[in-house]
Length: 257
Image (tube, rainbow, N blue to C red):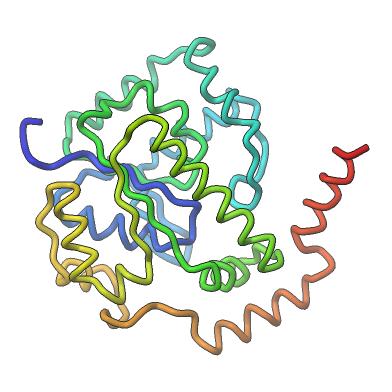
């Protein structure tokens, strides 16, 4: 590489603290796009809007209409990989070329846990580093429930485990270097986590950079508060009869016929 910084691809299932991580890395001079996505009334995700648009286009091209934020299925993988020989690749090559004009760049979009199977054959992998960020299952369940992703703890855990195992298997299968971080460690042990991140991607970030984009105290693990838990349980019980688990069971029963 012309400089010591690698391009960074953040892999996540979503609602895992990845936006905080992306905001931190962006402070190191990593390009996040001409425009980035903002959650209405919530926060800046640091997601390249054009990457999101192209990932949605890939879903359409592959005929995938599933809920990538709540259900895991291995079926789309083959369809996404097969697009390499069945669609016009130029828009995707052009996008990567535009990103490379701003090296080092940063990609973050939860859809990547699926679409990375397509992108891997176009990316300059020798110039990229992958960071997998996860969050405790308990905190994931509270966060998802507060956002009205209604499902049992067990259902959520199966989904999270499947996504994480899929990503680690993908990275290992292709010999790709990656760093695994947890959101709890990033906030609760920022110096250790940031030192590991710097060493891995060639950056010079500090806990002060993290404090600039994280509004709560550092050096304290970001566990769900008692009020958030109470609210999440109330939301779950109110919507119990329409929880996502029922969709899973109906699909399994239908497949078993």
